Image (cartoon, rainbow, N blue to C red; front, side, top):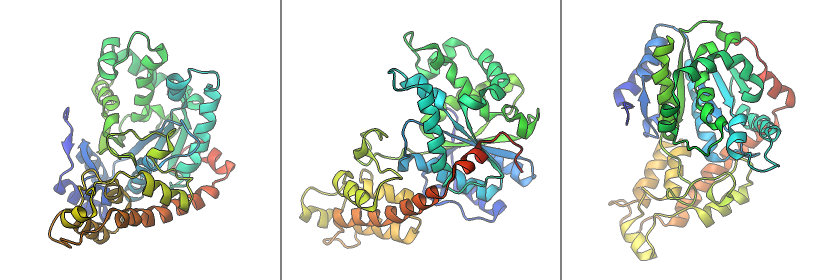
Length: 369
């Protein structure tokens, strides 16, 4: 849509050939399915020209859920594969503007949550020498010249058209898109790039973030800057099914990285939406609708073993394999539980090792190398 392109097998093959690294399962399985200008990133890599990664987090809860983890897990793989710098924007200001409608939702609260969330991000294993995590509340002064230039280049009617702002929205919301756009340009990081406008930026994000960066890409040539490249992921479904929204405040819709093994098992068994047939006999005969089955959809994201995923697809979904004795929903859910528990246990172990000093070190304004 709007000029993005499908990630083709040829593009994936080119990346594998250049890097010598097999493509991430999410690229091979089409979970990251669309891009803007990713071929220019590969051109830069081939010519040994610098580029950097940009992602972010809106800190609205103490713990991240599995949906939040996806962009960071993928970005970690990109950093390891391309050996490039990474900037991570903690949009504590955004959360205050959108959620600060009662006395307890202070800017300080979202700043604190940002620091807390940084622990989960660091636990993903990013390279401290190549990664800068920043709070907008702290860092915005450094980016302000960049933000100003973006603000001056976007009209109110453009912003309203893209983001659907209404006359009753506070003026902070109207100006926020420029703040989210700014890290797409290397001049927002003078301590890393000085005034160099040459390095390209690659943004892995969910498809719903694309409007922000369409605006960013529109404005870039007018400012004499390079357009950021994008990699889009499909929506990660809520535990309760794709028709419901995953919410950090509704524990039935997702699994937190802080959940215990028993909590994971109970949530999957109780809440995970099933694409299986209503009657056991029908399920054994026909198999499940994998398009809506959450156990299968989550396995596509979190199971690294292609052969195990294929086995689940063949034996649980429709088709000739095990016809008349198809896998039942309980078995499919058990496979998901067995996949999630070690991933989350490993994350919790890594998070427990993150100290206050490590958080401060990742967030220090400094040269990367």
